[in-house]
Length: 536
Image (cartoon, rainbow, N blue to C red; front, side, top):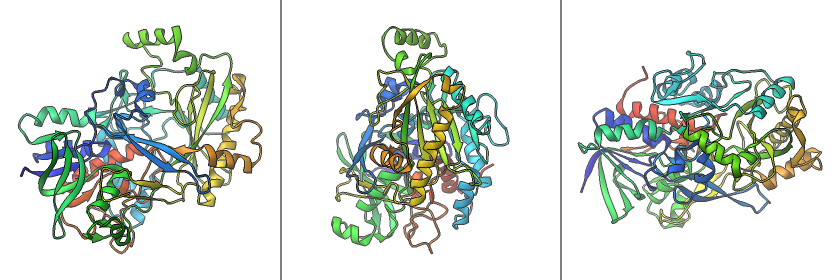
């Protein structure tokens, strides 16, 4: 049987970094990724997010339960490809606030305060453009850029937000983000830069030929193998059938907040009652596996637009042909850029000491579920609460790891979440009513003026809201005294030797920003923990 120092399960935002760092340290590593290599053309074109995000060849077909009482099931397309969701997402690099990570440390997770994780954020980054060097990396492999396409509606949103009372914050990746600024992306020179492109592929070039790094795609993990209370290998289904590989040192689970708990459960680690129901022998009864699931539940508000050429007009017909020519010539335009252009952190009510809601603006309007561009010119904005109190679950559907898990985030179950989302929608209405943005607006299309009171806005949120694909927390990090903790502060699974989890599932609480940056930080820090290093 083949053996490696480490087996990494999942080649996403965290797994790509862990794999590259371990290989660069001289370790032999086998990376198992269920999806294909990230070779699809549209993955690497920024505007191609509209094509790949729901593409079943590179995404998992998860379905997520809507708020209680709605009976809704909505799609949650997570990446199933090298680069993971970092190969199919909107490319927003937004860390969240220092208080998010200080909160992790205060829950008994030594080493995870903002001051201690900041060097890991910076290690990955190569900030191109303006930024505070105290908080931004300048020499890492991952380019972080401002969009080189300045749409006039994005500028209008910026000025309207300031005119409605928001601070003008030049960089929302500082320790206390507050206000409005242009979105920063992990793209450069018209191409997406996932952690796979920035770190894993160069590592494959360096180490693939000598056999110390073996990246296997189309390899769906069936279960982790144990000898007693030690993880010793992995069984997976590959193109040629089922295969077992051994780990001399550790198995590292980086499959994400939806797949990682499922893999633990079908391998015998989880709630004893669930494992019994699945007919899976118990290796270690950890009640927290699959609990504490969190996400940023969002609503999209759309407005009619006049006197501006929106994405809706640019995405088809002769104008799209012009955009293609711009892209081929390396000139700024729609195809080289993310459609998500402005980001604001706002207070859902004025007495709050810090922002609690995020707004993400696009100079185009899109269908509610698929995210496809509509035919009518418009602008839209996503609204989500930064730190939801609602907690849900993810559990294996059967003992066969090939079955998709059952996912219920229990959205809007907390009163504070409902209040914050409605308050954020009202703040957005004030921004669209402020000049100069108001000069372009013909009216609110969705939810529309009929949704005037809080009850109507909440019903709109309950019946149309969607996942932001920011699932986190389902293998919570915490001390052994925490009955629902799954891993310790070194990311080792409680009660098991040779097994760690290193992805968004370990987050005790979801950060206030988009989770991709935090997931990459966890990959960087996790690699150092495995190698017994500390950040320089």
